Every structure is written in structure tokens, then in C-alpha cells.
Amino acid sequence: MIWVTDAISLSESELQETFLRSSGAGGQNVQKVETAVQLRFDARASPNLPDGARGRLERLAGNRLTADGVIVITAQRHRTQHLNRQDALERLLALIREAALPPPPPRRKTRPTLGSKERRLEGKAMRAVIKQGRSRPDGDH
Image 1 (cartoon, helix red, strand yellow):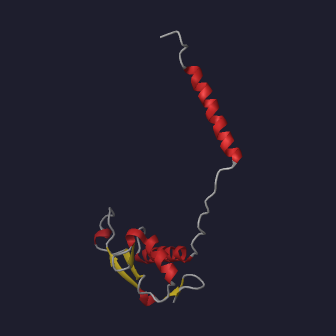
Image 2 (image 1 turned 45 degrees about the horizontal axis):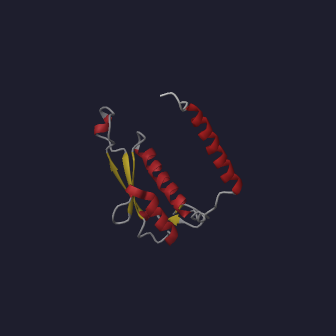
Image 3 (image 1 turned 90 degrees about the vertical axis):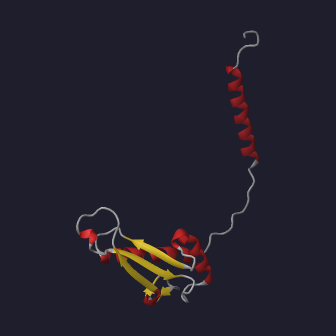
């Protein structure tokens, strides 16, 4: 079991790892060693995720979410497969932890105070006076 939060833990059987060659420059070794990791987690089928967290997780995943509800995380920052596996798992757990947080309270509409309205209008009047002073005198064209 992988502990995500106090209330959420994932079974290791829910995660699928595939290994592939890292992209980009790297010399002779990069052509033959599969160090990049692609971690797959089926968020919709996971019995360990609460429903609210599942919906938030799907929204947070964005383009990493497939049409089937599988989150795909590719890690290729490091030169070793072991470090890339850790990186992919940490990124998935961070995403799940963020989704597990309760949603923020809804925003309550507020109205500007009378003082702020007056200060805004005074500032506008002062700018108008400054700009009025820049105009030509009436007789000169």
C-alpha cells in the first residue's frame, strides 16, 4: 500500500509502469537504455478515492487524463530508471494530495465601500484637471 493522505492509500496493483527511451540529446547510451517511465493510474476505477477527490483529480490532471479516465505521467528528467520511477510516483501523489484537499469556500460578493467610491471619484477629478491643463488656450489654433 502507498499512503497518500491519512484517509487515502493506493494499492500498488493500481499503478502500471512502462519504460521507454528518453527523448532528446544524450549520446550513445540514450539510444539503447529505457530510462524514461510512463506511470498509469486508473482514477475512475480506483476504489480507494473518495468521489469528490476523484472529480477534482480529473479536473487537475488536465491533458494527462485519457478519455478512459486513466492518468498518464511521463518522467524522464533523470538519467536513471530508478530516479524517474520515484519522480513519476511523487508527481502522481502530489496531484492526488492536491485533489484530496477540500474545495475552497465559495466567494461571497462584496460591494465597494462609500469611502473607496469617493476616493476613486476624487482621483478621476484630479486627473481630469491635470489633463484639462494640457489643452490649448481657447484663442490659439
